[in-house]
Length: 202
Image (cartoon, rainbow, N blue to C red; front, side):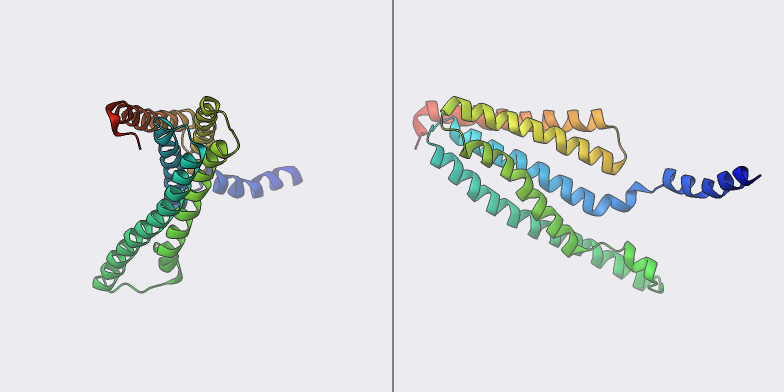
């Protein structure tokens, strides 16, 4: 009898865990995943694009660092403006409906500052990966290979993390993120190489 009572009491807890609403994480998760992927792919593409026409490590690192700062600021500002607009729309709708702002309603409202901070920090985290790969390798071809390999590994990690936190399929998420990153890097490298062959190398 005691055993059956314990099992019955544990059922609501187990059901609560199984029925966790992953959409509660959507606001900050979207900003974080987008920022990390954008930072990783953007800075990798910039470094490889410069590396397609110049083998100077300083040029590659300086370009990557400038892209990191500019990208983090851009992501934070863009996310802040976007989420703040979303917040204004929801508040206006609540006012039109004369809905009382209870504590639960306030918690569900989007937070522009949280989204902006998450986006900027995630961008920096993603951007640091290819920058470190380019900074500590002297040989030109090896440097490009390390940047590509480090970026691929990080893309897999970000895809896996986003899938686990969002409750979606890991394989599909990783594949989508990796293929998208390869396309961005390949297109940037190829077009930069064509420009260099065309005589526009600086």
